[in-house]
Image (cartoon, rainbow, N blue to C red; front, top):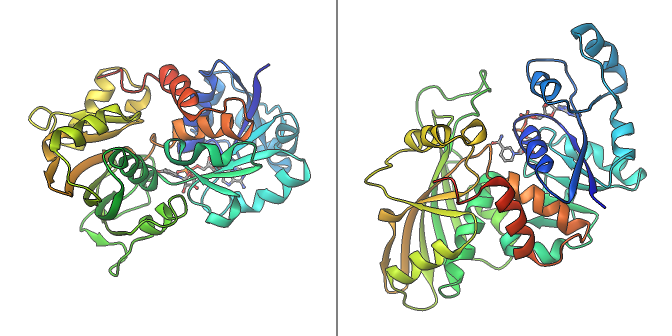
Length: 339
Ligand code: NAD
């Protein structure tokens, strides 16, 4: 029997997660919640997704020319798991409803840690989420950091992480957001919230991050300085990165920018030019005894999508082994197989 999944919030993350859920052999997408009838509803209509909305918005959709299937409550009642992809801090307002209707929920990184029992990354702590009621998939930058830290810990225990994050200013559709000029310290005094968020998953890690917001919509870039507990070689670090699911190494002589990377993803037929992997520039990997430096890109709109899919398998205990779930998700989404 397939796990029934509903998506609350059909925006940047919600729509991508919905499309990914539709590709899973062990899941059924029951429907999606959209609060306003606007351009973003059109893809759902075209794809034949069942639309649900707030009680007092049904008429707005009717006037827009689109019929909804029911209310948010109707959708929640008819699923096993809700993936809440509503905007930052809205997810927590739905928690009492999920609780009252006895449904499991997966929240996103815009919510505070205490919204859920576990902050989640499939590679790092899948098992902690097994059978849980409420899980929070950490944000895009945190997901990127955790995957790389996990990969390096395969070489030897990670002693400390220092990182600089160049954040995209907005997603493509966010026409009112900036900056459109200038680089903004975010915040001026470290650590940026990313280091703190990593610690919601790896509690005792010594990590400090700085962040700068840049006028770009394409992707974030992280440069990390990591101290391992034992001396390593460049080959061992590259092998570990290569062997880690959802980490893709690219040649910096061919691909020098996030712009080329996203365009190539489009050229190669990725939906929306989406990149689910951390893309590490192999040329950037520098190793000196126990010191490692590297630079990678994080496509903010896509990186958390496979993590949400795995979180569904974890909370329902559908698959107990993290690598088995990751394998199914990655095969269905073509991860590490498009380049
Ligand atoms: P978004 O604004 O693109 O999408 C949110 C959707 O929820 C919209 O369709 C909006 O209409 C809908 N919505 C608003 N109020 C609602 C309500 N009361 N009930 C139901 N739906 C409602 O936001 P997003 O970028 O997809 O972010 C969603 C979550 O994912 C946030 O927690 C965010 O921090 C996190 N996240 C975002 C990114 C990113 O780069 N966009 C990356 C990782 C994680």
